[in-house]
Length: 466
Image (cartoon, rainbow, N blue to C red; front, side, top):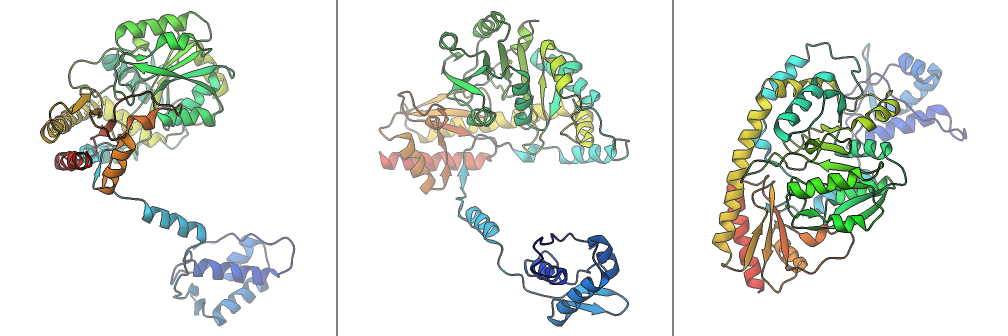
């Protein structure tokens, strides 16, 4: 090791050589200083810690005498072999919590993707090429222009948006971008959220201390009539594939929301284009942002769903009316994504790999969706279930004709190593509208065999309970 920092006590009850001795003993016993690791020389450490050589020498002598370190002539001091003690209480509790966290044989979670589809070799090759480019400067805080141009081109062609690269802002994750949006909108404005809806967005806005109102969702999405009865000025919509109901907002209601936004100067729509790439029954409906040239829609999306959750690259398209304020407020902010990663993604998109990857992923997920639907039809008795929203996104709803409650089904599934959620868990207000038990089944991260076996077991669990 080169050096290490010691936090000296200020009350001077213990001399510095004793404090240094106790610090090194603690690091060795906790396993932070490894066996045979070389310690800094007495001169180098004394200069770094701005203490006398006698302080370092006294501490080292005590450590040698007690066997914590040993010396080699003309080589220096090294850490002896000492069995590390148990971790600290905090670390121990974290490890125990992780160990006690149940693992499931069949996990129908909705936030996973099939990471096996990720083009590792192509991505790695592009990443290596980027290392030889001059990308060590900080770059643009809004995101490098080349990537913003690729994003603008992609969403114009595939989502029908009306934007330029100048309006695109790139950031590390949806949470970061929503935080930016929140800072650009009036502090006293209220956000209208879909109910049921995505609880992470709800929690994020709650942490930002924004006022929220919850608006019910019907078969066409958020209910505009209900929204009009509130003082909300920001409508947060997932029109391409509402989560968790899977509803796709038709063009007619999209236009109605645009008219609502245009009725007042401070009204905006945040269009979260969740799962828009994955449609299996028809062509995607154009984005709300692309339906009008009005300055009322903030379009936001992410690459995490299309590539991998660990690739934390999200983007948004700001209306021109907010773009100036963004540039003023964030002109000194650095980008939250490394330039190497930005340019890797840009090359991946520019050469055409991205579109090919999406097409391959869409075909694979269609197979998985079909396997899930076939398994439900095979293992559940006809007339006892209803499948909802199977042609869009990477999850579907399974409504059950049973006397069992959702919670009872979830707990019985858990005992049989099946992870599922019920739609009741996504009602943000704490009150649930009356409905039959309805399960939310994600399938992207499961194999075809796991889907079939998981549904077969789930059907037996529910049938035995009935």
